[in-house]
Length: 162
Image (cartoon, rainbow, N blue to C red; front, side):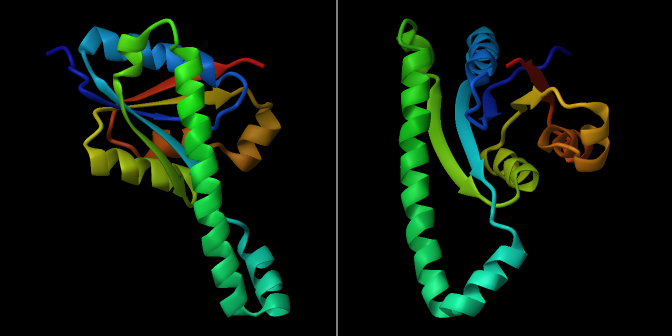
């Protein structure tokens, strides 16, 4: 049986090559009459940094500042994602209408992307992959690699070129 994709989750880091991935997403969405959720995940700061700042500022003040900035960052990135989609799909308004949600989430990217894909019932996840050297890839891994290892949802990886 040939798969039908009705809900596509496109996770982007908003890199310079993200437009290439968006074009692939739109092509698949068009072919399957699918809707798209555009997602960007803001990584949480390193725990050592949080502990250091909390020691200096106090946990209460840090919590307030962190919440305030998290909301501010989410609003700015949400606007940036909307602008990105409008700019890239300006000549194709029917494809712009396929994007039914834009989300800015916080946390470790791979588990957050997988959790969001499950939450919305995505039947395809699409992400771009950065070309990394073998040594860097071996030691650091990547969001794409982590998602590929853990997902049971079909995953389309688009190589990004800079």
